[in-house]
Amino acid sequence: MKRQSLFLIVILFATACSALAGRSDPYRLGVDDVVRISVYGHPDLELLVQVADNGSINFPNVGEVVIAGLTTREAEQRLARALSQREVVKSPQVNLIIDRYQSQMVTMLGEVANPGVYVITRRSNLMDLISQAGGLSDEAGDEAIIIHAAGSGETRTRVSLDALIQGGLGAQVPRLVAGDKVYIPRADRFYVYGEVNKPGAYRLEPGMTVMQALAVAGGLTDKGTERGMKIRRPNASGGEDVLPADLTQRVQASDVVQVKESLF
Image 1 (cartoon, rainbow, N blue to C red):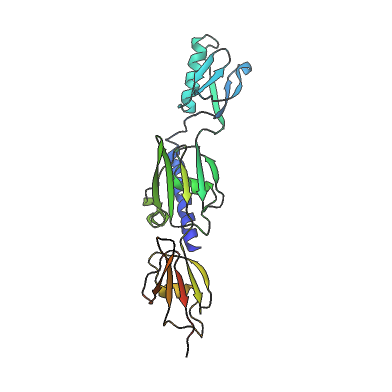
Image 2: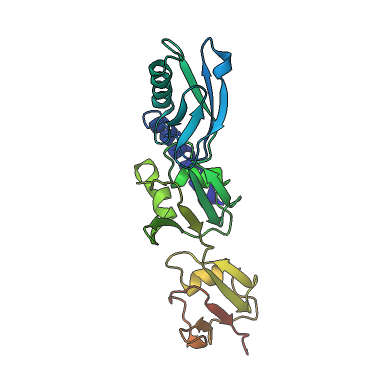
């Protein structure tokens, strides 16, 4: 929970900073966005329209006008020029607002509170998306995987969430673009069975030793002994290796630590 709280604080700060940065990096219209247009003094020219696949809208008395790739201000200026050039309105004052953001979509998968498809309403980063998705779940691992379409294939970038926490506002937070997918894997687990007070599955922390694993599992019972402990570890062939365990040994993902009962 401490880790989750720290990450939440970093998200809040990063999101606030990103919002400030977004003021100088305005949203650009795209295909499927829905815009509401009005012209001062001309209610007959009011329009609610979706940007077509070719990036254009069909504007009354003007025809097709391409607005994809423009900011709202640039789109207003383009529409005003079109109205003026076609002598529909003299010195038109055009107002355009975005009714629904639908062109900039990214997908959030894995261990977050609310996986799904989200809209980027400005230049968003990884922290923004995790925040939109309700934050990390208790099962979240230590990294995020950003999947980005590249030609006919894709690229995958692994980002350490712990590094973002430790780096705070000084950390480089990856930017996202439309079509990206972000996956938060489940944290690695290990298992402790036998003569411990709280047998079960536990989150594997970096550098964890057998001694630390036993402590997390509540320590040995009155009948437990450190002698003869074993680690059952999955191998590449699909089977498992049985290894002797000592207290300083590092625990790996999916290890099963078995603690025997003392004979004396």
